[in-house]
Image 1 (tube, rainbow, N blue to C red):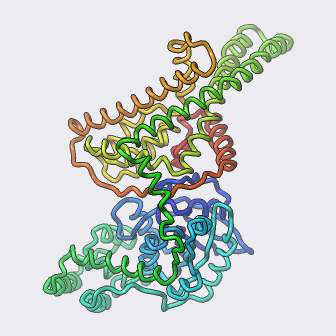
Image 2 (spheres, rainbow, N blue to C red):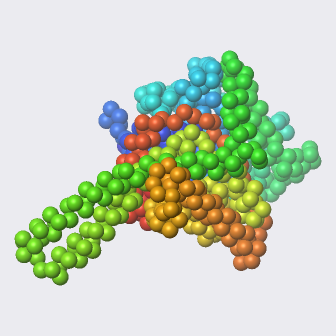
Image 3 (cartoon, rainbow, N blue to C red):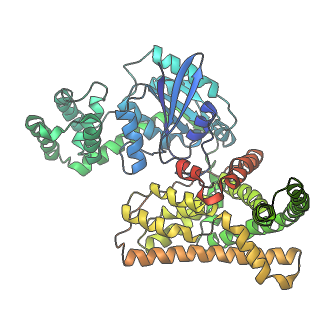
Length: 553
């Protein structure tokens, strides 16, 4: 029988990398949060045992505040996976531990995978995995998923978990007043809940009046707790007793969050050793440059200019070679079609129409795409793209739009289709619609060759060739991109003030650590998984973008 194993964790901890390594699928991964916004599934077999792995959206908490967190929570709590592997970032384990403890409250079938141990080692961070396992009383493994180290321990840990199920795993305890009401209400609530749903976890959700939990309970289990008057009265009585002890709903929620944070801190205090207290000093110095009001936008423009200059200058020679090669075949193809007796009415459109257009498109579009995609991916792998979103966030906020639109707009640089489908990460329907309507104003990579050709023909002919010509072309192209960003923001402002009025919602954007890009992997992945795939599918309209939500085709 196939076992279902969920992969959960904070955004940008390497879940998708683990998923890809185990299943062999090529779900896109990158160094910025928000990559996975829906569940990806893959099958894998080990020693004759079949597993279905489910890569859940990255979430910071099961106390659902966003669509991604609701999807992750509902799958873990209501879809009944046989095990949950929680992937954590070894460099920020304390922050990740909050989610680990919340998942452990919902199910006992948990494995903790501490990923990015190679980065932790570089930052002189040591984690005592054995002690961590003793405290949590669950299997704990250490991995460096990008290089494949430690992944071989996952399946043995799953077998250990299935054969030795424990009832005494670590459970977070709340303040005494809350614990008393939980124990009282849990006995009554258990009668109405399915055995597969953790009654303690459900009781806490009831006490804090979690509306999304009630909706999911009705959706998945067809249970309406308010329909039972006796139970409803007991729930209200518990809340009143807590209120008499100054525990209103807001304080209940704060106490729950505080309990998880404090427990995570205590656990990591005993298991994580920071040999260098200033291990993240380099990242903070870089952030002062990349996100500063004075230098942030200047660096953005210079990087944009540099990427486009390399793209334009580097594409000239291969474009010319491909053009000469393909058009040198034209006469031979024409002669062959004449020799086999095809009439002019057939070979004329085929050669002078279809072949010439295809040859021109390949020679003009393929080289810039083959150069731009790796450069774009290197910036993503380095961790710079979320800084671009951070810099643009306040401008979208001033337009009464969602700051997450900056993330989806960045996706549009690679492919507008992905920039539009990526808007699903925006929770507000109003703000999502604004982003969908305006994200196409940013030119995607598929339009760059046409824009470059137009710039070359009409604006830089007087410069001749060489360095100045390519630099000026890159400068004009960078201005076109900035104009696209400005039009996007302006259109968002107009829509939010007229047809789509409303108050902007806030969101938390985690800035991932800076990482040395894997240059070889990036080049291979960009050329084969993006450039050639995108080119073969017809670029921006490729169905894969819509189905897989890639940030580029």
